[in-house]
Image (tube, rainbow, N blue to C red; front, side):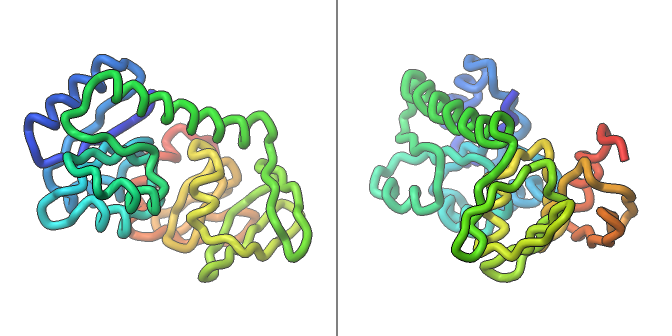
Length: 231
């Protein structure tokens, strides 16, 4: 099931999306928000796969919401105004639905969602490795060998079982490319392989004898992720 939330301040639009989500069957609606600030707080402690996001919202527009959103899940924008379509794709959104949203158009958005998740699955599960540019060369790195990743501005340090790499890619790249069920962001600067965690405490965790801090806003999320993970 794809876990989703709705961020929409108009009741009729909420009801339409809720109805379509229920009809589709493969989506699991977790919450509906009228306030984007409350949605941001919710996302700090809950893992979500998809957001239905209105552009015109009180306090914070949909575009501004995307700018401050960490570890962004898939996003489908909903709006009555077509002029934001070009700008929306700067944020790599999955689709852009114009209100009033018809069910056939909703189904097309679901097709895009399925294609997106299938491509990720093929990359990370079938191939089991990822191709990364290191200096002038491309190196195939097994996903199972990745222990944790630390951000360093626009670069990331990639710590693997046998080697460490400095890669000219931001942490956001790894958040989007690596499988979410195997990796978890535990701090604004760290992404870890949950299966590699050796010890877990309130403020930190240990991988390969290296202590890694757990950020305040990630504590609950880490706790939820580790409930069914054997250390």
